[in-house]
Image 1 (cartoon, rainbow, N blue to C red):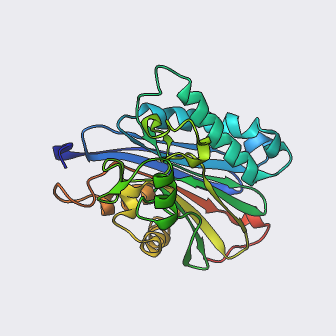
Image 2 (image 1 turned 30 degrees about the vertical axis):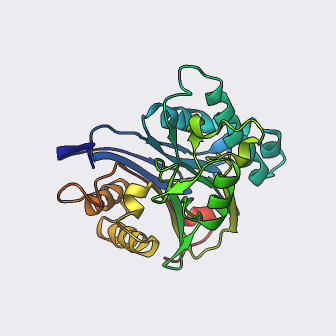
Image 3 (image 1 turned 120 degrees about the horizontal axis):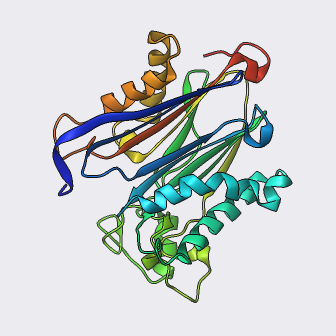
Length: 295
């Protein structure tokens, strides 16, 4: 890659949060890239509910400003929707992604600043709701097994190709119009200029896929990360690394985040492991279930 440094920036920006119900670690590392374009959000005690929280990872491309904007505004945008108040969380996420996208489109200072993936997890007392647009990813560790909460949106997928071509684009070398290596994102408005089609049918769309899973006592943690992590580790490898790390560190979730990023960092560039990396680990504590969890 032409945008790699001679040596990686391995400084990590780590934060941890803990309530009676959750233990959360967040970590970002620039790595071999010349700039850091990721953003993330971790909002606990959402709307005053200690079992409700929102987490998100936003992987920027062609700049960091869209990712920063999405991370800064997703919580307020989500909770302000009528669907959220009605607990129609799937509809609330769709409306939220559309609002973030349309607001950026109307912002002359930001609309030409690239785009970002967005994977978000809303945690309630009984459910984990995931909304994803792009190739960042969320995974739930259930009884030690990785359960994917999202699917990557790549231009090579048949359904994505059909939408891209209908909107007037093409897929070349697994990239939209030969340039963008993902098929859904917030921003990237140069791919959203077909005035005959609605927002969710553009070449690049911000429309998220939504999954809803009931939470049980066998669920131990949720991990969200950008593709810089998933390019190196499979879902199961990542869950195994986190599980082992939590045991080794006696539950130091921030340190475990750093351990995962160190494991994913390439020893030399270019190649896999040279991207920006951001990870959030959400450990569900026994009090979350009202009884002990199994790992």
